[in-house]
Image 1: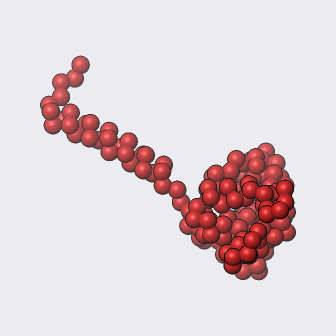
Image 2: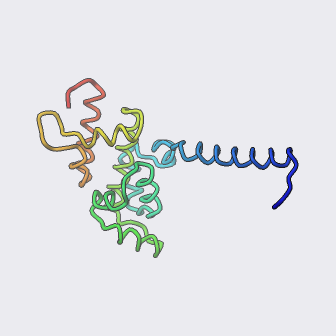
Image 3: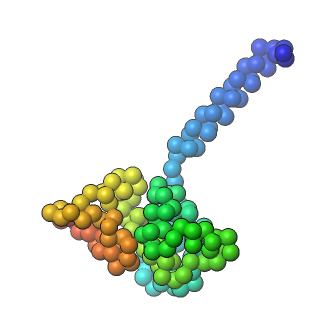
Length: 165
């Protein structure tokens, strides 16, 4: 057993408390999609296509999945690739193909807009899972193609102008 003076014990316990508090705070703070991917120029269709043609690093795929709280397998299915293939690309340091890159970049742009409109990713994810008005289809069902991503983005635009979606 180690004998500690009161001040040594107090510093030790306070250090544990501040460490656990800082860990809790850092895990509670979530970086927005806009902030996490602010270096990507996704406002211009031209810049998006130029970036997609170069290919996107798989690291971006994993960062995006994490930031939108979506399992990697589900995100991979949305961009029509297997999660194993993404993993292999990461291991081989190979970029995603232009088609998957464009799709991923469009999804990032969509989530930026959705997060801006709904306030956070969780609320936007909830909206994606709700059927369209007078339909059984959900917005998330449309995200499997780049054109579907564009349609959902258009729906968000209508919603932001007060039209029923």
